[in-house]
Picture: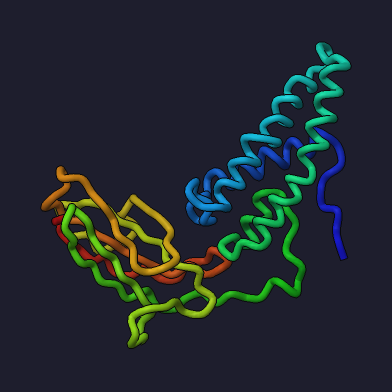
Length: 227
């Protein structure tokens, strides 16, 4: 059964749109919607196209004292163009396994139907990973589940790994001390640095994140010098 989840009224649609864009923009990497991806381009076309047009028209319409018939007509026109694209954005989020229930709710979107809300296990062990120096100031990071003899794959229900790293002249034993972060879904990963970083000690820690965005335990940081 289809549910009409869009709010009634231009003010409420505007508020939902601002909320959704703010959350998605802040989580593009975790959602796998970086600019070079197909989904990232689709989202950017939505944000900079019909969403931007509606929000600009809304700002011209919301001042009752200055509102004209032209402002009303423009807002109605941009709302008509926005609504099907906003529904399409919800479908993109709903079908994205990296988007958890918390992401949908943060955007102002409805929960998934109960039959789709299968519990995703939270990892109980951190990833096993190896760091190999490569030429060109690069580090090769290969990760896999503990106990997997083939050294590949992911535990059931896990979308990928959250990675933290930082340069440090002293030993780092807690992942919380590592400030740089990214999300990665398919081992291996190659980090590239500049020549100025050659010889510096880089500390890296990882943890699995499931399809609802919940993280397992952090690994103990590993150290490697940038070649």
